[in-house]
Length: 98
Image (tube, rainbow, N blue to C red; front, side, top):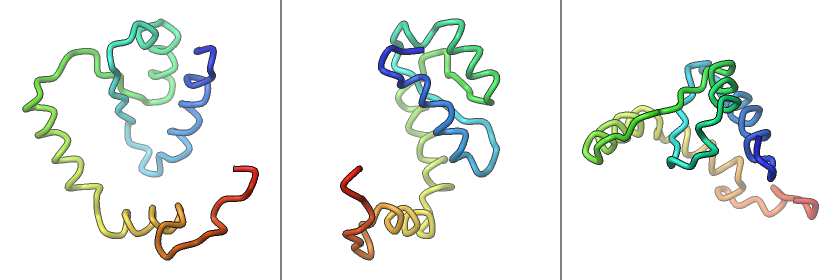
């Protein structure tokens, strides 16, 4: 777990938002802290896939575009805009505590 709490906070956040219950893909940047036994065990326990090898840029783009085509649907985008208060504009979406 990281000192700043990022790792502690990550698993509950992504698993709570995973409505499909499909595996979660976590793309890492190669930092050594991502390769600890604890992180790997946490990922396995929570159905999180940690890509462990480099992917060619062309393959990444192909995979990204496939996922994007499936998930970037108007209904998803509109829902995200509503939740964030972007559209329709909702000035009350955040409180002073936020």
